Amino acid sequence: MRRPIVVGNWKMHGSRAENARLIEELGGHYPRNPAADCVICPPLVYVQEIGRLLRDTPIRLGAQDVCADTHGAFTGEVSAAMLKDVGCEYTIVGHSERRLLYRESDQLVARKFAAAHSKGLIPILCVGEQLSERDSGRTAEVVSRQLDAVLELCGVETLGQSVVAYEPVWAIGTGRTATPEQAQEVHAAIRARIGARDAKIAGATRILYGGSVKASNAAELFSMADVDGGLIGGASLKADEFLAILKAAG
Ligand code: PEP
Image 1 (spheres, rainbow, N blue to C red):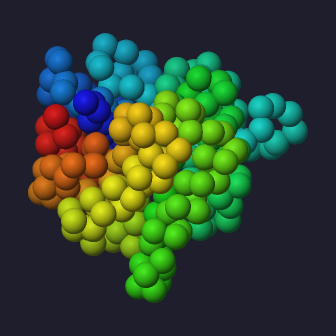
Image 2: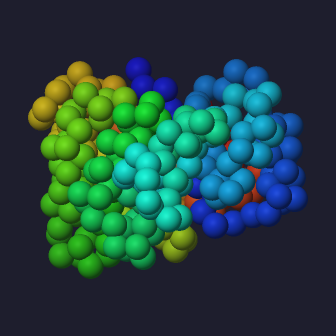
Image 3: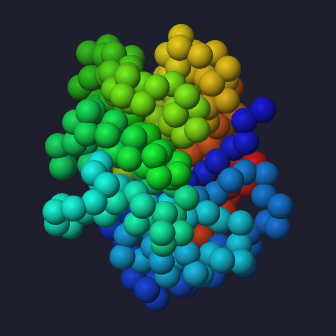
């Protein structure tokens, strides 16, 4: 039985005052024994402070990205060990905004995944196709390629200790959500791809859906057999929406 998980990706939003308000609202209404894991990934500059604010809650802390290298002359970068040092337990790698806006290749994403895993962070590996790729029937090919880069560099065992997030690029921040059936089809394909290497690991790997998940569509998406929760952008910035999504996951 896979425990559901909901991850909030705050992207580059918030301020110290707004963050404190949001955490207070979340903490005040958060169930004592939640039926789903919850992770928040704030902007890096706020990670430590959010960690302090979350101390008495079951909500875990994550980062939005990590450097592929361990230390040295990499101006502006932050290593997996540093993230771990300030209390992160998770980190997103390969978000489509990083792949597209910062030209991160499948190979770089795989190296980031390896760096995170090697320092004891749980990587949340994002995969997903662009609209033109879906329209030309290449969804499975693109997602498999992104997944294979990690499987080849890191091995299937490491994937079993991580989280995969299927995020169709055309659904991120657009208000356009994949239908539950579209999500299920790709999630099942991802599980089968992992299963071709190790069926037990495939059965245990949590696969999240991300892309305009809201309180109003979460339950339907999360009811699909291979959807184990969500990676939430915009709706993670609104306490009532995010809490309702968490409830739907549980
Ligand atoms: C995301 O940033 O990963 C995401 C899914 O965003 P949104 O929920 O806003 O579409």
